[in-house]
Image (cartoon, rainbow, N blue to C red; front, side, top):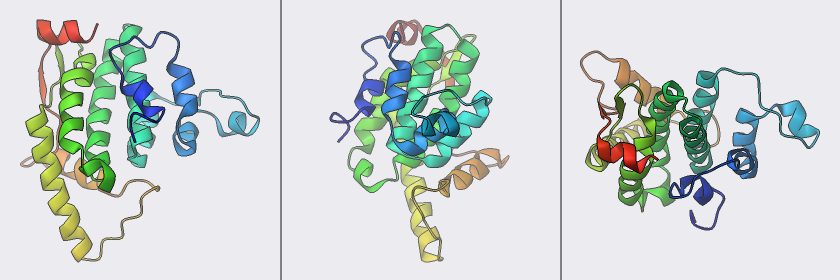
Length: 203
């Protein structure tokens, strides 16, 4: 599924993107394209970036909560890293963490969630470094957050929760509410120092 889609080009961090970032974004799903590119330009058969702040774009992509929107965030992170925009890298890392938790709830992805979390913690999150710190959620931390979120989903569904994939992801509010509760913050991403190893991996 992943290896046979444009998503793999985004996740294959062992080769630099160079100037391929935009072409990967163009190959992703229509909802992702609408978050990144102007609707008017898409209708005209062109790809012109929307005039939006980075946070607005990342919120829109997180709200989709799909593998393609996750791939788009990875592409944007890798481009920011290659261009030396370290502050953007950290901000993108936070959004990427939240989107990763949402994507992990998708039925097909649940089968490979542990492997996906391991891959991100070792090969993607090292790109998020800024001023000596980075998003540093381990596979174990992500898996624990995933399991707790899965239980929350079951409880919400039992209470009549209407889950409609494809619209703004309803679980994003659950994740964000937990992050902002002073005594909880269970779903917040881990933050740690940029070790020599992580800097080398992100080159």
